[in-house]
Amino acid sequence: MRASRLPWLTLMVVVLASGVVLAGGWQYSGVGARAKAMGGAYRGLSNDGSGAYYNPGGMAFLEGSLFSGAAEFTGPRPEVTPNYNSGGYSFGHMNGETWYPVEDNIYAMGTASLFFQTPKLPKLTFGAAVYQAYDHNAVMNLFRLTPAFNDLRKIQEDNYRSNWDVVTFQPTVAYRVTEKLGIGAGLMVNRADVWVDQVRLADNPYGYPVNVRPYDKLPTMTSVDGYGYGLGGNVGVQYKATEKLSLGANLIINKVFTVDGEAVERVFFPHNQGIANQYTDPQANDIPLQTDIRETYKNGPEWIMKSSYEVELKLPSEFGVGFAYQANEKTIVAADFNYVFWSQFENLNFKILDRDVDNSNNINASAAWQSVLSDMNVPLNWDDSFRLSVGLQRLVNERWTVRGGYMYDDTPIPDETFNQLFIDPAAKHHLNIGASFTLNDRISFDGAFEAVFGGSREIGEAVDANNDGYWDNFGGEWKNNSFNSTWALNYRF
Image (cartoon, rainbow, N blue to C red; front, side, top):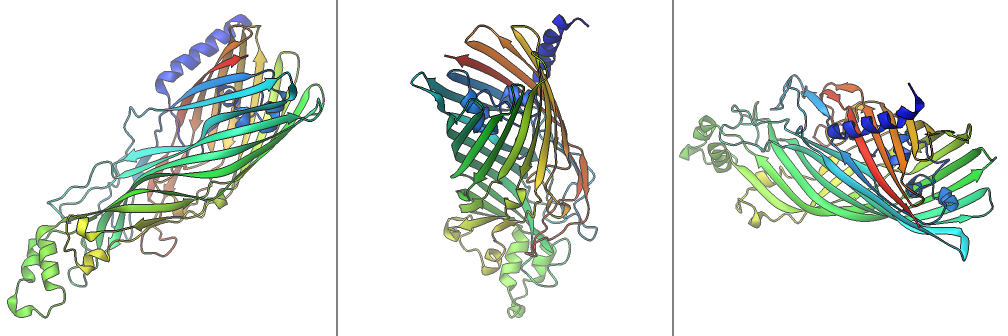
C-alpha cells in the first residue's frame, strides 16, 4: 500500500464508524480527539487543550494561544441476561431474556478549551477547559409485576435507569520553569447530574399467613433526579529529559460533595381477593391489622410518595505517569500508566428527605405502609484499578498526521456489589485510531474512533453485602462492548 493513501483510508474509517457511535462506562475513556486516538497515552505530550486534563504541566510548552472545541458521540450498549434469584425465586425479574438499552440511544457530549500566551509573559500559559471525564448511561426493562402478585397494576417499562454525568470546568495555569521543565495546576469545578430508577424488594410488613410467597416481598421503585457541585485539583509536571524524550505526571484529587434533588418512591402491594375475604369477619375484630390487610389485598394499590433526597459523592483520586519519545522526525511513541483510587468512591447512601404522607396518593397510609419506605443504601466496596496506554503518532506530510493506540482498563467492581447501577463487567480493551488535517498555520481538524471490548461476567446468587435487608448485586450474564468517536476543531492565534 502506498503511504500517500494511508491518511485517506484512516479518515474513511473514522467517518464510517461515526454511524455506529458507541461508548460506555462510569469513568469515560478519555478527553480530546488526539489523546483518545493514542489510547490516552498523552501525559508526556500534553500539547493541546486536552492537556489540561492529562497533564497541566505540559501546557507550559504550548505553542501560542489556542482555542479547541470537540464533539463526542456516545451510545452505550450494555447487554444483560438476568438470572436474578434468591433460593431459586426470581420475584418478577425477567430471567433468561436478553435485554439491551434502546437501539438508537446516542448521547452527545462536548469539550472546549481556551488558553493564552502573551509576549510579556512568554513562560506563562493560562486559560480554562471544560470536559467530561465521567459518564454512564443505561436504561433497561428488567422487571414486571407478575399476575400472581398483582393482576391490576403494571410497573413502568424503563424500571432500571442509571444516568451519571460529571462535567468539569477547570481554570488552569502553567509555567515554564526552564526550557526543560514545566509545571501546571488547575482548579476543578465539578458538576454531577444523577438520575436513577431502581427496583428494590422490601419485606412484607404484614405477618404470617399473608406474607407467604409470592407476597413475601413488596416491589418498590425508588427514583431520584438531581445535581450538585464539588471541587477538586489537578496538578502536573512535564520534563524534557532530552531532545527526544519527554516525561510527564499528574495528580487529581477530589473533595466529597453533595448531590440533591427530587425523589419519588413507589410501593406495589399484593392483590388477592381471597385473602381480603378472610379478613372481613366482623366477629374477628381482634385480629391485628384486619382492616388494613383487607383493604390492601382487596385493592392491590400502588402507593406514590414524592419527596427529596441527598447523597454524598466522592470521585476517586488519580495518579498518572507517562512518556513520549521522538523515534525519528516523523514518529512519536508514547505510553502512560494511570492509577485510579476507586476505593475512595465510597458507598452511596441516598437519604430520602421530607416525606409528606398528606401529599401522597393515600393520605391515610397506615404505619405498616410507612414502614416499607427506607433510604436507598448502595454498597460499593470497589477496588483500586489502573489503566495502561500505548500510542503512536506519525507525520505523513505537512497536512496529515495519523495516530493509533491501545488502552487496557481494569474493572474495580467485585461480584457482591455488581448491579445495573454501574455496568463494568470485566477489564476493557480499547483499540483507537485517528487523524489530523492541518488546513493552515491557524486551523486544524482532528478525528478519532475507539472500539471498546468490555468482556462479560456472570453474577450468581443474590447477596446482601451490607446486611440492610436488600440484595445488592444483580444476577445474570452482563456484557458491555462499546464504541465512540470524537471530532475537534483547533484554532491557534
